[in-house]
Image 1 (cartoon, helix red, strand yellow):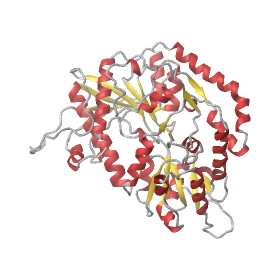
Image 2 (image 1 turned 90 degrees about the vertical axis):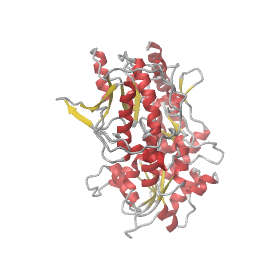
Image 3 (image 1 turned 60 degrees about the vertical axis):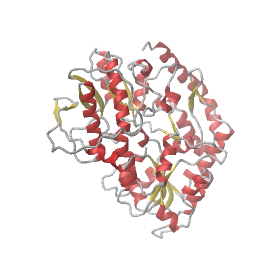
Image 4 (image 1 turned 90 degrees about the horizontal axis):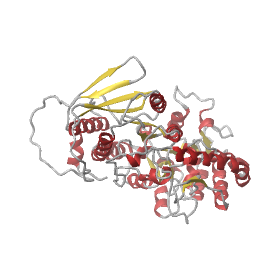
Length: 490
């Protein structure tokens, strides 16, 4: 990902304009113009494009045909990675603008962006009524996977020109979500998917105040485990208002939203796809029980951890949702640790204390790798099954994914994250660990109750017996997925 300064500055050289139009419905369209305004001539030194080689695609021009991309609007996960109306001086925005403009020029297309309140539903209704609404769209994993089982999307393995061996595609999805050689959800560098796996932020000011060893050192020494994490959480508990009790006015080691990200970090796989392409629910074992016991001691503590609801209970949140409010408390030194993705760094930009990031803790030192569960509310890409322009779609998505790797990724990853938000070079190494260890989960994305069974067992300590009671239900749910995938002909 390293880029020279010249390569980075080249991201913002292109100046052009977007026009915006809207219809009377819930969909807003933006259409890129391929003619840029005149600019003073400047001597430009031609340099070789850095990074990955350009994909080898046949020459095609589509003489102004539309290429329609749809994505969700008015959502906490909405980001301007797909299309933007105009340049505004913000690096990522302008890199997306430049990428789309160059895509239009290369293929002779008019990129049309459609914002929709519920793309998965709009696409399904359009297909059912015989209407065409887009060539490709992005929506939440949790919503896309059930629709994929109903056959609304194309098997991406059948779309020409898509080279999933290239580094700008997320091959972790193929490992975890491809069933019987059928793949209906995917991601590439068009969407900054590495924003969405959950990892750990830590407050460096509190590390120093309580004389704790840096989590960075624990990662380097392979001692970043649940036991280490628990001891560090325990070390930070302070009755700030002196009322003799611990509540949301005091300081804690951990603020957390949900325990499943810790479970995955400790190596638990709720479901997997076997070597024959068949999904399976994994049975808990003694190790699973041990993970749950260690996590229970952390998240059920009333003295050194606080969950999202207790943090906001009775507090003046100043109009913030409970998620954003909890993160403001981390930024104000009320918590040592908070778990979230890279996208929330913008909320820490004015934080007085320095902060760092580390992977989710391992179960113990014998665990070989770190693991990070993808947020099921983040976005994936699908292609509607009534898209008949697959050559055009495949070429544009392949080239745009590569171009995103050249333009948008450096603007966000190198400049926005590591120049403006993260505050030390070590954070880059930590995020590389996170990016390389992302996991997806069919049981989660398909709405099964596997993760909730683990969650309910944290307090009750009855994981094995709970699974035994629900085994028939899990088998039935998995078989339903298999049956539906077998029926899909595209």
